[in-house]
Image 1 (cartoon, rainbow, N blue to C red):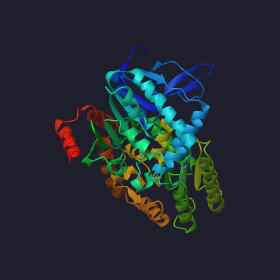
Image 2: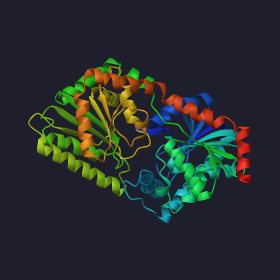
Image 3: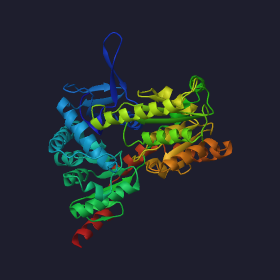
Image 4: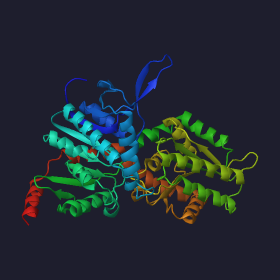
Amino acid sequence: MTGRSSFLIVANRLPVDRTIEPDGTASWRRSPGGLVTAIAPVMQRRHGAWAGWHGAPDEKLEPFEQGGMNLIPVPLSAREVELYYEGFSNATLWPLYHDVVAPPVFEREMWEAYREVNERFANAAAEAAEEGAVVWVQDYQLQLVPAMLRRIRPDLRIGFFLHIPFPPVELFWRLPWRKDLVEGLLGADLVGFQLPGGASNFRRLCRRLLGLPYKGNEIFLDDRVVRTQAFPISVDFGQLDALVRDPNIVARAKEIRMELGDPEHVLLGVDRLDYTKGIGQRLEAFGELLKDHRLEAGEAVFVQIATPSRERVDEYRRLRDDIELQVGRINGEHAQLGYQPVWYFHQSYDHEELAALYLAADVMVVTPLRDGMNLVAKEYISCHHDLHGALVLSEFAGAADELRQAYLVNPYDVEDVKRQMVAAMRATPHELARRMRTMRRRVATYDVDRWASEFLTALESPASEPSMRRSASWRSG
């Protein structure tokens, strides 16, 4: 990579994973996931760059190019991974922003590491961005970067998008470093959230904490206006829709059902192993349906994919133990020769196998206790051009705002989850098709490309003169 870029993404991770070939040589491949899918084409069109950690601690790499993207590795030490990433990002901010499903940890050493790493990312961005460039900062790990970057490079156009929920004022208020984080975000010209409620929470917090006036989506600082807006992220509908029409994927979906014993109903959960995902609640509901004989042996199986996540964090190790114990208990009580009610897999799956699982599943069960969006729900819908299949969806997932035709549940109410699971399994083909058709139309229209396009259009449109005049009138008032 040579020169500076007019378009720059700043994220905790680079959009590539390192793989070791059979001959021992290392290579890079594009990471799976919605963010990379959404932004990579934009970067390629704009000849942009992406700054982020490459995944290995205590290693420094020079910038390199991969898949038409200029990549700028930002180094992290093992201690910084522990304190900044596993610590402040995921033991403090993650539980706090997810309605304190688990208690947040407030430690000054973690905060200092978070601040220092954010400063390193800001410096890397300042070095890589050309005059007047657009810089798009991603997610909760880098909330201090916008203000730090603006201090170094006031010429830049800075956007920030939060992929997780932004909590109510009452929860955020607990954070000892609340003012630093809010001021960090206010360094951006545009702060994006998944839902209007998150943007509203942020504006109210700015008024209460910093005394900043706002009107509509605009927060008025002394010398400029910060816009806040909801941009619900989505998936690559076209790619998924085409993938599940592949004869190999169709054949694999049929094979999966046979491997499961060809039950009448296949229920599926696909999640990172995380305490916010409500995995225990859905398994409890399924186990009780078997215990109550509302489901007979062999009638339904539940497949739960739990992708490994943050396994060095104590809370996640305990969760894994609890889930595995729960699965063992259900199978121990209800399995018969030739029938296993719960199939649990603590491993990752590639894009093709997940598509086949989605296609094979009659009921997708998505029951997070709190989730910014949840793209699994949208992926499942994208994979059902046959209009078969039902989505059981938590009211506390951001996707519930868009997918009102899902079987919506309160995951804290096990009876409600049981009721809606049964309703989804007993629904007529006509009812399933009616619901699925409407949800597919929504996901197809508001896909991931539209998400990225709408955010960048809003970021690059100049603040209107009336907004600036209102800013002045608010301050004078």
